[in-house]
Amino acid sequence: MEELHDSAGVLWDGNQPLPQWTRQWEACGPLLAQYRLTIDYGRDAKAPQDTVITVGGATVHCSDHPSADHALRHAIVKAVIQHIEHEQHHP
Image 1 (cartoon, rainbow, N blue to C red):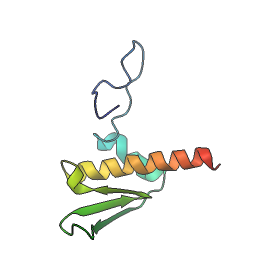
Image 2: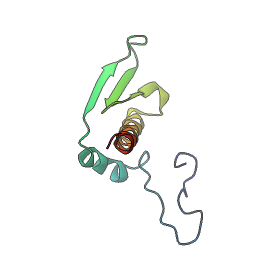
Image 3: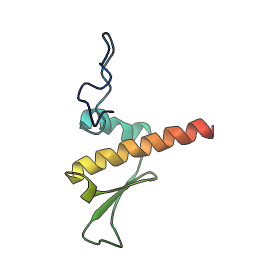
């Protein structure tokens, strides 16, 4: 939802906007500490020119994003989502 709408979360009067986790470091950065995520950079064996970023259990290809910065934020958010989903199903 955030990727498609700059006003995500404020479609109804009185709602707080959703944090723009994949767009702003101010929103995304604290997730690293809160969820104790590790970051690893590597190369794709099938496409060695492509950098792969792994955060927690989430892997993102830099070539799928406009910049490595954006790819890293996306990987962080993806890792947090995986963590939350896993916690809900395996308390």
